[in-house]
Amino acid sequence: MKALGGPEQHGKRIGKAIDEYVERFDGQRSSLSIHYKLLLIERCRPFLEKKTFDQLDTRTILQLYDELSKQSAKGALSENSIKRIQSDLRHFFNRSIEVGFIDELPKFPRIKTQASRRPHFDSKAWRTLVRHLREFIKVTNRKTLRDRSMFIQ
Image 1 (cartoon, one colour):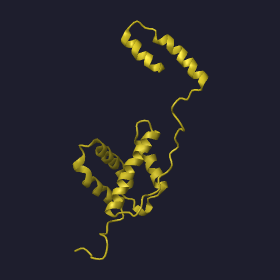
Image 2 (cartoon, rainbow, N blue to C red):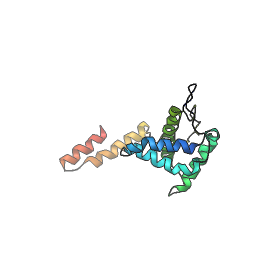
Image 3 (cartoon, one colour):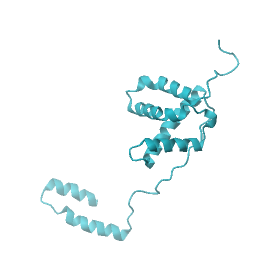
Image 4 (cartoon, rainbow, N blue to C red):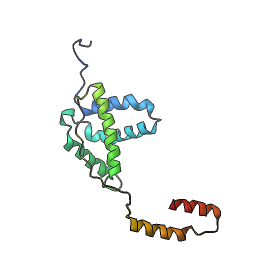
């Protein structure tokens, strides 16, 4: 019998929320994004299962990253892997908010990223690059010539 006066009470353990999350999305496993989210949650289950939502903070999430990096083949996680893991964990925590396990998202650690990965050329370097491309373009095959001449424009 449900109480009339408030939301349905759930356990404080994260393991119960993981079970509900997997049960909810297991039918949609054919979607690759859902499939990878469920795989991540299953990899996180041994670490998070016994913890409570009250214990969930930035330090706990960092410890989870350390645990996941130990499980990885290289022993470390790349920036993009951490971003993907954060995205999937946010999906799990947002679902936990909808169901009523927690009231707000926990704070995630900041990720150190490179400022810009694209190469930047000044005008002198750009002129040198274009000058060398002129020699690269000189071919007899017309299709190759067309493709290579598009590099300059």
